Length: 508
Ligand code: AMP
Image (cartoon, rainbow, N blue to C red; front, side, top):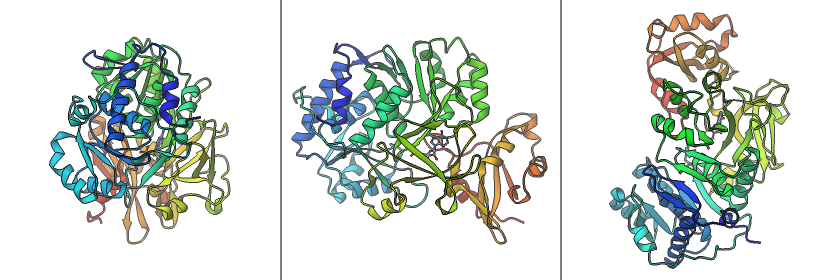
């Protein structure tokens, strides 16, 4: 049996080729027949360029139907797809091309000169263009090719994609994902979240990342249903499309922004059956307000580039705010303390996972890969978390964000939650800054509301308000009041930037 992921997806495409797959902002529709034919033409082109199965196809392009089809064509032809965030600049691109050595690089026309220069340096033989309207030399070169293509046979363990992690410390690592990894996660999520005929997904996520490319698109394609395929998130636009949608997947910022819309509420969500959140922590406050305004309980899940989704709140049964739910079927998850022993209920430890969805390793980094896996094959996620009495998992943050002050561990989330609950506070980020006595000093960066309560916040006021509720070593030594926190494209707070920004400041 052909284990190529495309073969699995295509086996679930609707029998009628005219069935819609992507609905674009201008009303144009890409049918499943269009997707099959366009991906066949591109797969034929890729083969004609001389690429061999296993070769990499890198793409740094905007989100368009053509860029999704390029992904499908690449895996269909047996290549390994390498999506790159369009925000990456020269030195980042140089690293990715040099490291992955793709046989084809598809770029935006505006960086063609740079792409040629870097491709020549890295020995990339082919560079083609795709613009934000889905045009360019990639499409011109693909058009004359046949619109049928026999999907290249692949084994479960053959690579389908390499996704570079955001690399907030050290070199960015290329997570190698196999056809089997992606297929397993796609099947699991499709079933766990009860995808059904007639579903309509609102797709406003980027497609260079696991959330938008794999989680969202695979669920839709495996379901043979349609999605509103929008270039990016826009709250007003989401309000127009939600009444015709049934499922939305988003990062927490999407939900926060929707709640800022005065007319957002039950009526707009009347046709919806599921809101999924992930990629960054969803504040309990957002979860509660969303429920009160819409009657919908957001389903929060947790995962990462290195294995897709690991846990999810249940579809049926209680979705518990502030938690990421239970390990998904097929994922073994354990939380261990120092010395590798399982933690007790409520105790924070290091999260490790094992399952068919967990990645193959880091591209060209066998040493690094070995370090991240335990002797019995569990992957150390780098996230810290705990179980509650009913086995819901709560994430406390990345282990590298753990603050160690005077030799004692401080989990930022515990302090952030207290500060966030104060009047006048929008949100906060707790980090550790170098300190001569303590090693690290607990430091809170607090976003204030633009109102009287926000204006009244002071460093000493915040410290005084939480002091009685925390052990002394956890109380922030320093507090900075700011207007917003730095976030990446997936809505994650960039604590590394905060640490850089505030470290050199002279303190008392
Ligand atoms: P990425 O590989 O870019 O998808 O980032 C994965 C990381 O995002 C995880 O290791 C977690 O630290 C974080 N993450 C993902 N989902 C959640 C969630 N629901 N709550 C808290 N953190 C999350």
